[in-house]
Length: 93
Image (cartoon, rainbow, N blue to C red; front, side, top):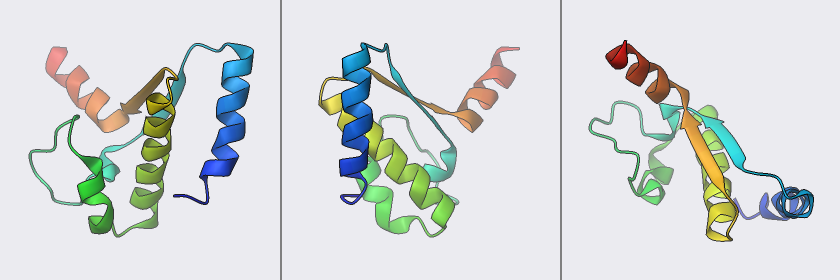
C-alpha cells in the first residue's frame, strides 16, 4: 500500500486545491474474506488483510485503505459497497 501513497497524494492535493466536496470510493463486500459471516461496516479492516486471496479483493481493500487515509487527513470521504447497498434496497422495497 505504501507504494500507492505518493500517487494518491497528488489526487488529494488536487481535491483540496479545487475545493471539491467528497472522495467517493465504489467498493464491494469482497473486502471481507470469502465465507466470513457477521461482517460489520465498522469492522477493523486491518485484521482481514492477510485473509484476502484474490487480487480483486486485495485491490478493493487497498483502495478503501487509501480513502480511509484521506479521511484521517481531514478530507471528506464516502465508501459505497454495492452489494450492501443492493441488499438494503431489497429489504426496504
